Every structure is written in structure tokens, then in C-alpha cells.
Image 1 (cartoon, one colour):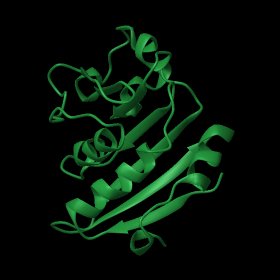
Image 2 (cartoon, one colour):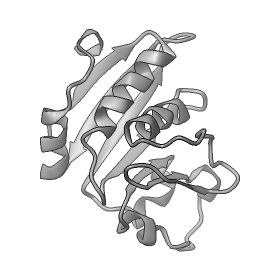
Image 3 (cartoon, rainbow, N blue to C red):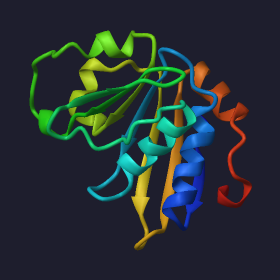
Image 4 (tube, rainbow, N blue to C red):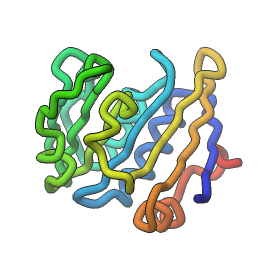
Length: 157
């Protein structure tokens, strides 16, 4: 499938890219975020929250696993980092099949519990504030989604 790559030189631009994406997200959409520790997964999620109209501060759900935020659409923020090697189903489908948008950090650790159709986003650390953000759509919904997002022009390649 078509992959789109963006370059960001600031936390603000990274959030702007995520905000523009969020403006096109719909209930039931699943976005996975991968990248090394400190790459900017939670920063990207903050941008998604802004685009969904979430007013509350977004923080990493590393220790709670799942955080829910109310906005124009509910945002379900899952951090699967602490679930590596776990085979226990802790009810992810309730969120994924729910009425909001599900964002999953470290999705590879719960691969068996998430749908094949999703938008995969890889964030690579390139320097103190520089990031490469790659979007890989899995399924027609996400291919169409990427074609409708009005991303900031200066970030695209």
C-alpha cells in the first residue's frame, strides 16, 4: 500500500501533522504508533487529541495501560509497552470496536488483539526536535483517509 512520509523539525509541527490527521478520523478508527522511547508517540497523540477536541492534558498511559479522553469523539489511548509477552486479553476490543478513536503505542506487543485494517505510524528520532513520520495505511478506509487529510505542506516529502 501507499506509504506517506513527513519530516518535522519541531514538536509543534509534529502535533500539527497529528491534528490534521485527527480532523478526518471517525469512530472505530485505529491508529498504531511505533518508534523508540522518546521518539514522540505521546506528542503525536497530543496532536490527535487536539484535533478531536479533547480539552484535558494528554499524558502517557504507560502505567495505567489505557486512558480515555472526551472530545468531539472519545479518544482511547493505549500504551502496550508493559504488555510485552502477555497473552491475556484485557478487553481491547471494547475500545477498538467502540464509538471513538483508538491510538495504540507499542502495538506490536498486542498484535493478536488489534485489527489488520488500521493506520500504522512510525516515528523516527532524527535529532533533538527532528522526526521522520511514516504513515502506512492498511485497508481501503485508511488509504482513503490519507488522501483526504490536508497535512501541513512544509512537512511532506
